[in-house]
Image (cartoon, rainbow, N blue to C red; front, side, top):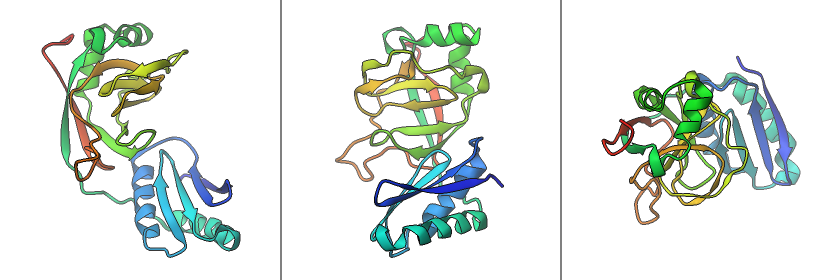
Length: 218
């Protein structure tokens, strides 16, 4: 079992943080802990992250220490939970103006641009959690051969729909925003739409496949 530590965050929240590595099993156990905390009266909100969970409390002055002890115990008792999932295919135009960092990823990994696209699109991904922006999916399952550090200088604007690699993860920018991930392609799908119910296209536990467009490298 991965070791975990709990600590206070600011004046109203408690964090449970796991030691590396990030694994699907540990994320499934985090999902289970989220479900268990959902009905606790002292809890305002539960925010799952990658190898961590943040819990905001109604009355932190009197419940914080108890929450830390309880979170630690519940983690040790937790079991992996498999969420209801869907297979979502994401059409992507790789390279060119849609993927300005594809060449850099190829250079860093020692692969050709076509090989980067093929390996990225051949993998099966799991949505570990939604964060950073509304609808931004942090996906587990990126082939280790594609891992590439973030850009030394983040862009001031990354277009909505951009598909990027940041370290050992891949993700999709739902909205235009500054960002430092290596952008290898773009999709026209809207990952976040406040008029839609639910507003986010992807949910934790969903499976994702990227489908290269004929307009791109492949």
